[in-house]
Length: 244
Image (tube, rainbow, N blue to C red):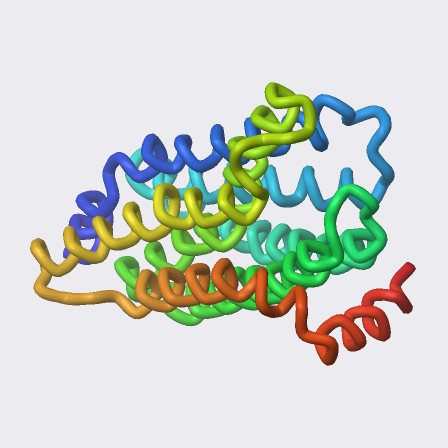
């Protein structure tokens, strides 16, 4: 009965997860993939581990439906190291954000706060996904939720940078406007719909989706105010400055 229920859970998840993967790849095309040979090693580690994590999250639902469960479990072990690579490499990249000449001080420090929140949320989703490995429904939803924690930076770039080039440096939207638009379109709407579907079919609301919805919304709205708070700016200079 357990194996039968697994085969019915998220039968098309791998197809739906291709959407955020494509959006993320497109969002980082101009700032990373298009300049691949010029990027420093730290960015390669982060970019490639994050890409590998996305691919893993796409492949795992397909494996559980089409191959023996042992393949899913073995790949899951690799995923633990990949997740560690995503977080560790992100911490190596973050110090260079506070000296980014392209961003205003508000965005430098605000994005640093958002990055810390995103890495924390991503890590917790991975941990709870592993913790609930024997409960397929909870396990799958926690790992699917990891995508939303790292989706927003890419989709905001996908909106803002083409506008920046089209309007010769004076786009009609600010970077924060792009963040808020993406928050609604790529996080609030899809997660709310997923919560609705769960409640409709199971009369149940999963903590993973609620946690991710509230967490991503919080850090997105906190970027602007945190970028102006002197105590946070000083803390970033102390912590991140030492990483340079």
